[in-house]
Image 1 (cartoon, rainbow, N blue to C red):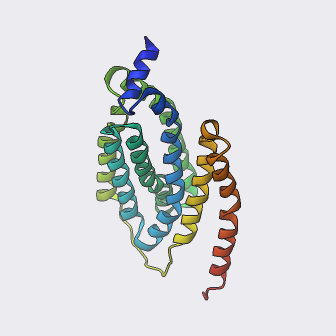
Image 2: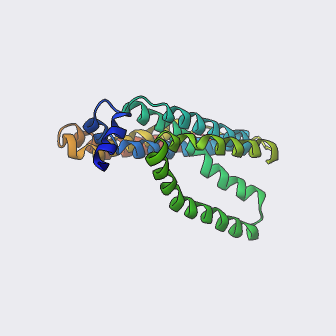
Image 3: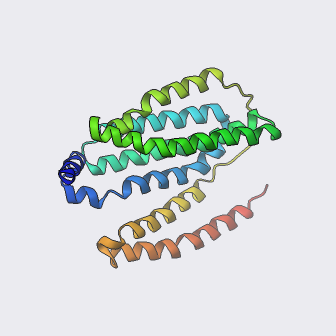
Length: 230
């Protein structure tokens, strides 16, 4: 009975049960990939425009991705919206840590970091259990919908309580470096995830290119950046 229930849940997100489960690892990988690729951009934007607007933008993008994940009509759409969710998540944790560094002294940061780590540890234990209850008794869509009220409250608190003084400094976004990181990591992730499906054709080429192409490109990009006048 349980396998049938899981199969029916998968068919709500994908055209077929087998096709949905074959794409299942991408739900996690595309989120982490988008998050990792967007963190450097958000860090530079926070230096340019301040922590508060960047953090609010990240929360907004994350909530939009959560809402779209909840209304996904197949597995491909769910994966795409998870990527959007990851783009927003790239601003939440790093900028929150930066805000802690701005608000608290060196002696107070250890205590605050301990609180944040405790929240992370508790949520890592309770979150999967609550998600399982939603999937079992309500709908898997509520795994994403539950982010909306919590995120809205968090955004309201940041918008009304966070005060900062932005000091504008000349900066330049490293878009080329971020694009190279995203491209290389994407090819590597594609090679690892599709290795058991279409190995060694397209997957092998993607993994090989991920190891061969981005390093020379990064060396060229960093070298050209070093030659720019400061």
